[in-house]
Image 1 (tube, rainbow, N blue to C red):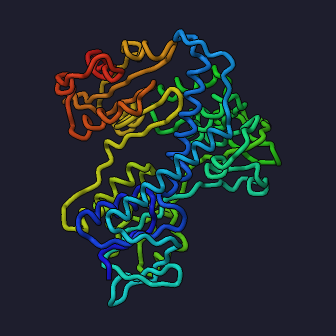
Image 2: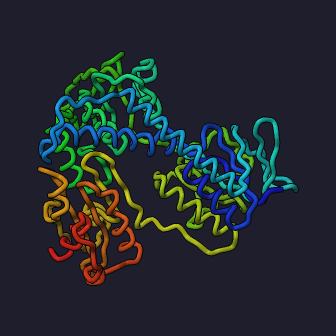
Length: 452
């Protein structure tokens, strides 16, 4: 009997396997597709690789702003896709190398939970049965395809993130159903390479859940670049290459696209695993866990998207670590108040902590300060004509940092500092005393603090 079986080799599963093995546990990791999960194969890494190609193309096309002549610049879609595939292959191999280096037994196959016996928790795959003292469920999530008439009968026209990443030919036009993070990242990529892009969003604003002001600014940037947005609009039917939707005034409208991307959210993968054989509690389609990532069944843990709470790769990795620490007897709890969210558009958006909307809804007294990114000399030097914003929320009574919201490059590389401030409950005064390097875009955070 092994110490731990992990089902799912994504950011939750493979990080947990590495941590567990490093702490002396014997580990078996099951993955039915490729190591790295959705993030590495169909999400985070391939999309960011393509987005970086588009960013390089954007900079090249506008090189004259920086005194660089770049006539005749072209974008080779096939080459960008090939590079994306090469990057994914390299990183998947890297994860496999890590598992081997830590003596993690990797089983390629679909795992099924048989139940618990005197030999431990029983899991089968490829006709063989394995037993473990503990089980960690990291089966992740899958794209949610809403029951819209015609959406499943559209053949290869309608796609999720998986299929659109497999395209080998650039579509002339793309209709995106859903203006969330995934939708906006694909809108950014295809808009940069001159595909005609339309985004249909049911909510009044894109990027629901992020700071409303930042979301509106990003939408305005892309609207000026040619992306068409239909907000507060509900898709009612897909007919061949046409998307039919209801506008805010109740009228029916139609938009046509060579391809149609459905990006309205994701749902946990819990069916077909045999969870019922252990009696694992499922709530609204997700595995229910406590702050130590324990399910209702002793020795059974869950981490990542399968818990349905914070569907982000970095959340999954930390949840996996929490689960392992509790398995080995180290008291550790999962906290969610400082989980960063990043949208890898150009410009990037990064956010952590409370938004103004959330603070008002929760009745939390706060103060807000904000500055344009142009207050940073480094930002001005590297983003000719660029739009950006830094917004900081602090508590009214103690001045503790509650939330930080950034629009502008490179927000994704700056937000971790705000995460530390919120996680450590730093006050405005304490953060003011931190010395920031100059010249960096990150200085905008300190400048904003002095705007209170």
